[in-house]
Amino acid sequence: MSNNKRIADMFKALSNVHRLAVFHRLMTCCSPGTKCSPDEAVRFNVGELGDGLDIAPSTLSHHMKELNRAGLVCMERRGKHVECWVDPEVLNELGQFFSHTG
Amino acid sequence: MSNNKRIADMFKALSNVHRLAVFHRLMTCCSPGTKCSPDEAVRFNVGELGDGLDIAPSTLSHHMKELNRAGLVCMERRGKHVECWVDPEVLNELGQFFSHTG
DNA sequence: TTTATTATTCGACATATATCGAATTATAGA
DNA sequence: TCTATAATTCGATATATGTCGAATAATAAA
Image 1: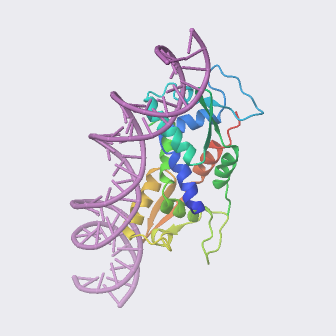
Image 2: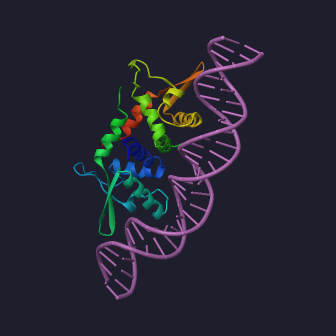
Image 3: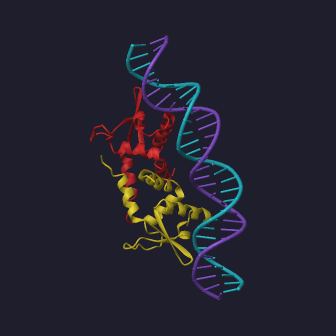
């Protein structure tokens, strides 16, 4: 897959309001009542990420799969839960995409 | 429209490889054989932006409309041509989106 | 005015996407 | 083993998207 296609797929993953909300929550670390941990990537369970989004669990699962497939979010099962966190390298890559100054 | 929806729409506009290529060409200023002008936003005609993309003019026009609707690209008719350039404020906004460090 | 160039609109069509509920899988605990 | 919880897969469906070619509009030049 070309690099352009890879980048386009990341943007596609962020083009849905629900996925964007989930990604933003993962990215900005502190959900209400949660303490930031600056050292490690912040992790949420899939279920927590859907709080306040008013979508079915199956839909949320589908969205998480999309974010994961695009390479934006990592996922790892831990007991009954599946932990999710943002791939930190991807943040840099996408940030730099918009900082191109000729 | 909520701000999240606005941002999601911008990402949607960049989620297609052809639109991403056009946007990137506009953003990075120098197409092959073109000289950069650091002062003003770089402008291309709609037709030029499709060079090497192998899509129909009507499709390209549709894509430009999408980029414009999303607020990423400005367009202005100038004689027979329509000039296009990237909205500079939008570059900052999207760049900052990924630089959130908690 | 007629012609050529550039770009857009329109209608059609195939493909992709978001969403749900029901069924299924994975795991922990009683 | 049985039950409860968390998450995923599956099948269905409505909507959105990318694409084209033909027709149309806007402009400049002959």
